[in-house]
Image (cartoon, rainbow, N blue to C red; front, side, top):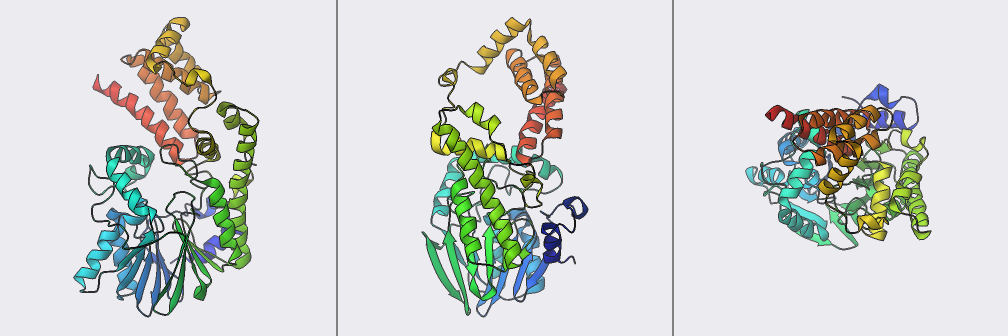
Length: 431
């Protein structure tokens, strides 16, 4: 079995390249012993285990479909009861498998584990129920390429949050100290990817369980289809972690990291990048710039995005800039025409008339696809809105968006552009 700590050290220190290693966010359901009494199961979100005198503590339970394999991997390592299940936050890839852990306890006639998490997780679960259909749709769009590779994300076709995932039994607001089986655990709340996030400091092991504050990809601080993220507070949390001088960092995605200096460097790099985006965006907002200007002006040094734990394979800086605007400026983008806009279809039909027909717009989009894919997407979308039943327009739209998907780096962009291409392909096939 690969030594995860050695792999991460080689990547961060530059002895090997990401291309030589391959994906670090692996879903193989293998358990690796990271240190004495510490293990990690690599799954859709990892489950991080600590063995104590009173039983196992599990940080996160992965998602429901993979949770049976997660629990099996744990049981091959230890038959000890689960004392506590800690939700680092309420995303379904972290809480969805909880029911399987509870079933294991019941089948073994062990006491039911305590479920621990931040007090905002309950409100998140209520929101998931309230917006179930929307979340099912965006999850399919965001992770479509993942499910096509054989990793299923949902438990029931029409339900986003598994009914077997309960709210936490034990909650806290800012900090909570636990003592379990002779091991101290300090749970600390910080807003970042979510408003219900927990990171944990375990002094005995000089270890931090980071949840999704580190995901071995550019921080998920801009997701275009999800609720507000908090990049400035995310950066502050990374600096607070670094101040603990941890010797072991255990994220919920990607590889564990060892070494005080190495961990500090990673945490600082993430904080620096987020703080740069916040500073540059807010400076331009204060100067009266529109969102359109800011999105195209604020750019990170490309060298930052080449680091193995910062590559924009999931989220990307441009989306973070938009989220910073939303956080501080609301939804109005500074263009008065967008305050109370015409319907997309009405504007598109007028532009098609001016251009000499929807086909003209679509053909121009196809001609621009290589040179200026952003502009090409606008034109082809105008074309299909103007003539939504045109087979030729949909053929071109599918080509433009399929090309756009292929040149993007982030899963989020690929998911949205790929879905657009598939929509037009489906319309063509129906005819």
